[in-house]
Length: 301
Image 1: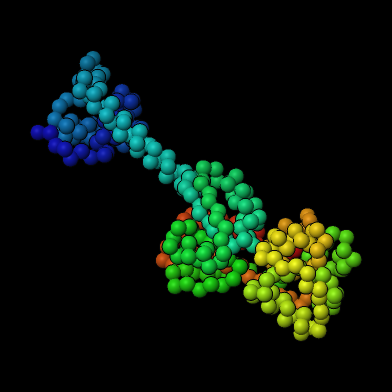
Image 2: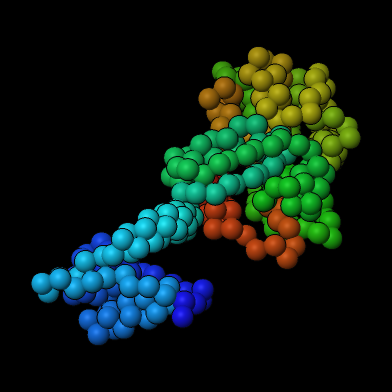
């Protein structure tokens, strides 16, 4: 009596025998013994309720019913092969998606550079990069609309975890050819009465920078305010003044402005934001590792 309870190993044995034509070669294909192969075929015939093979002159020949059934089996195995291929691609990080959000300091130029390199190493991965304020990045991670985020200030949230990636000093940038560019390290006294491009007063970085100059009794010419580090770089490149910016932006600003160390050090931080209780995918883990390596290079410059 036929039973609908088919076992995958029996179906695999039937498929192998249809493809290899002899029990010996089919058994080799499945890495089992000939008796085991024969048993699987016999059990499969009992399950389906009709003969699948006839023996003629020492050869096994598929019945008409077997050929019809084999067509359906192949359709099913095409799907299984697709699943296997997908699993292999996921394991090799050549399939999947990587959704990232970052605050402008890292998302406008630095993250695109890193993600372009990552995309070359992992073809087939869909990458999304969103640029938002730090608070919005945290909300996107908390709601799991993105995988990870990168922000320039700590913003605690019960649904996210913050991992500090850097605690590096800000850099001083000057127009190319500026008289102070000959110095390796600049101090507040060096910038006395210099036109200065600054962050808005509402920014923590602005208040910290201003406090350092007040403590050293140094006055600057506060000429321009801008929200984004990249905009500040553009102003400095045009000769609007000098500035202090985050080390990440400074790491690729050297093509447009002179970049120098500044003392006393004013620390700038970068945080990785991830959802609490949500395990990271292999793609997220790999990209986070790449980013940490890139940040190590910044520390040495």
